[in-house]
Length: 303
Ligand SMILES: CCC/C=C/C=C/C(=O)SCCNC(=O)CCNC(=O)[C@H](O)C(C)(C)COP(=O)(O)OP(=O)(O)OC[C@H]1O[C@@H](n2cnc3c(N)ncnc32)[C@H](O)[C@@H]1OP(=O)(O)O
Image (spheres, rainbow, N blue to C red):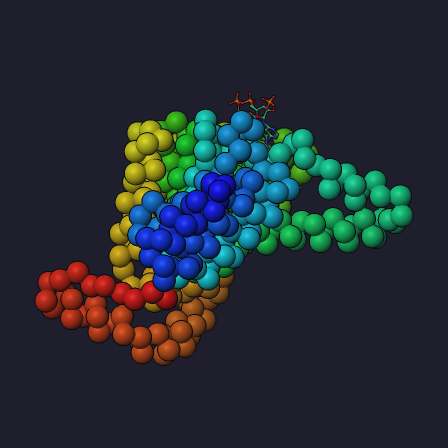
């Protein structure tokens, strides 16, 4: 019996009703660039898993990260996600040895300029969708960055909800050094995350590296931990705390904060008003209120 089957049977035998966990065990081993585990109840850990290539982002990675977050969005066993990188660094960004798809379009003998442009745009839109899947997934995503986070790594982490890093972390919006404008979300999300347009432009125009202390001071990360181990512990602890809360409340909060970032205050208020006219009917509010009064821990059912 192979290890995939073994893993599925292990989960399934523990709790035969839990088909969703068994399916996750199956899908996690199916990824070639990601490792997906469940280290705590309702907390999923997604690791970029190409350590020998410094977690460089190849075509398979872009496909898998999008699929993974689309799946997690619908997975009732998942309430929070921690995203980290396996091995020496978080990620070296775009895999510079896997540009075959771009070259094939640029040099296609049957394409004229318009067709080449159209195909390239289609291709980029797909990669953008893969990172936007993180934002579209209603579950909070905590990025835990150690060592280098280069190029596409800043696009990726800018789409996350919370960012922690270790003291040895450094970040670089490197795209201009490779002759292109960043196109997977950094230029759209990063300035809004740090709330300082001039600072964001300086970093994007110069490709200057910035380190953990500066990342914390500008507000790109909210915590700096001493090393990789304590970083993962802190991220998983925060994830577990969030996972203990009402999923209706937490996911509504993410949806509203993402919406409000891109709309006026009044539009945001109207949006949450309409959202909560439905969500205030969930049992979570009563469960939470009773637990508060009785000084007990509230338990919320799956969403
Ligand atoms: C179509 C556009 C959409 C997307 C745009 C995204 C753009 C970007 O991401 S721009 C940034 C691109 N990345 C880089 O320029 C970083 C290049 N790498 C490095 O500078 C260093 O590797 C790094 C400082 C990250 C780590 O250094 P370290 O000494 O720890 O490792 P190395 O010995 O350099 O590398 C180990 C093996 O990993 C391979 N590798 C590293 N980075 C990449 C990469 N970006 N793409 C492909 N492969 C990479 C490296 O070749 C080594 O492999 P091997 O020789 O087989 O051992």
